[in-house]
Length: 213
Image 1 (spheres, helix red, strand yellow):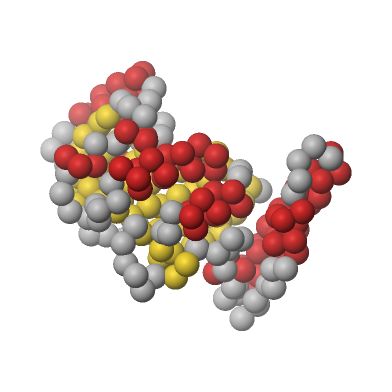
Image 2: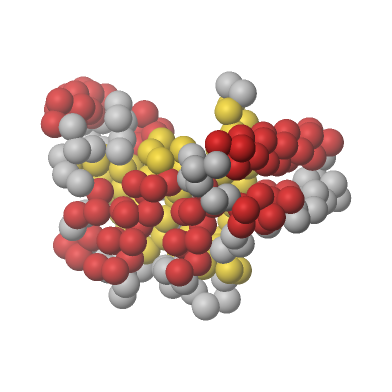
């Protein structure tokens, strides 16, 4: 989903830097930034980059994602945040949008859990939707959202997703069906627990109409 070109790509919570390294190899960004709050991880990533990409355009940063120094860089910037919970992702995106609203920013988000709450926050922040896809890997489902801070002609973020449920093949239709069933079952279990009110979520997902093309 990263087609570029971007002046700066930020691989946030980069862990071992595999995603950023693949983007370096593809040369879709002029500079790839590797970000993680764990100093040991960043030291390891830095050593690998010096070894395998000694002449590549990259930088490493050991800091909180919400504190990215985007104002120091010019041009079109893509911020990738994957592998963290939607609750933490909400905090990151909210801070970055608030502090850099005038910047030419795009986000590529892949939350683990709390997708519904994250979508509500994205709607509040008035981010435009470029694309969204549903991915299944190792029996786990992931929603990936490509968003933009600018661009008035973009689609609105849907509370439970829109394009996720539009299948172009039988495989995609079955995947969407499995994900919808699993998501509803998750909220129904929470409802039975009686501690959290999830009637809104259950109603929203129950209203999803699968489009098999």
